[in-house]
Length: 319
Image 1 (spheres, rainbow, N blue to C red):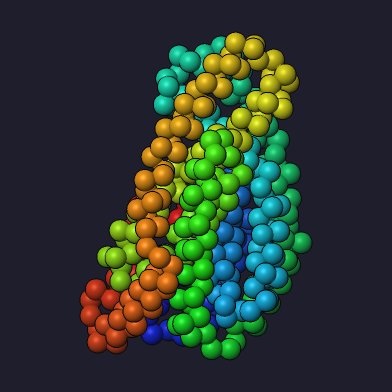
Image 2 (tube, rainbow, N blue to C red):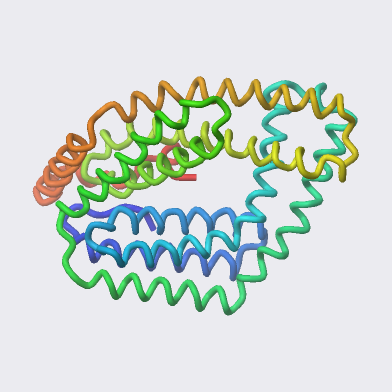
C-alpha cells in the first residue's frame, strides 16, 4: 500500500486509490491493533498523508479542497490529546539520552512517572472514537473526496500544488528563525515542511534516486523540528502542571536550561538543512517536477528498470 502515484496512472485514479488505502488502514488499525498507542500514532500518520494529498490536489479541487482537508484535520484533532501526552514523554526520554540519566534522578523519575500516568489515562479516551462513529466519519470523508476526484487531473495542476506547498515551506523558513523563541512560527514551518515531504514521496516513482536524496534531507529536517515541537509540549506541561507533580524550583530551573540548550542545538542544525532544501525558487521547482514526471512516465512506458523502482526504503518513509 505504497503512498505513491504511479507513472502512467491518471492522477485522479491514483488519488482515489490512495484515499481508500489510507482510510482502510485507519479502520483496520482501530479494529485490530492490540496497542492503542500504535493505533493512534499510525492513524495520525495516515490522516497527515490524506491532508497532504488534498493540498497537492488543491488546484484541481478548487475551493472544495478546504472542505475536504478540514474533514481529515478534524479527525486528527480527536486523536491529538493522546499524541501530545506521548510526545511529552518522548521528549523527556530524549533529554535523558542526550544529557545522561544522572540529571533526571529523583524528581526526574517522578516527572517521568507522571507523564506515563497521564498517557495511560489519555489513551482510553482517545480510543473511544474507534467505534462506529469514527468509521462512519472516515467513510463519509473518503467517499466525498473520491466522488470529487472523478474528473481528470492534469500534470500542470499537480505541479502547481507541489509548487504552492514548496513555496509555503520556503517562505516559512525566515520567520521560523527571525525571532528566538517564536514557537508558533517554528510550528507553522514544521507543518509546511512535512506537507512538502509527503508531496515528494507521492511523486517519488518518477525518479526514485532523485526523490530518495530529497526525501532523506526532508526526513532529517522533519525529525529535528518535530522533536523541537515535542520539547515545547514538555515545556507547557512543566509550566502548567509541575505543581501537580511537586517538582522543586531547582529541578524546574535545571530542566528548563537543558530544554533551552536542546532547542538551540536542534534549531542550529535545522536551519542550514532547510536553507539547502529550499534554495530553489518555487517556479523552478514547479517546472522541474513537471519535467521529472513526464520523463518518468516515458521511461516507465519503455520498461526502464529505474522507472519501476517503487520504494525509497524505510529510511525515507514518513513518520
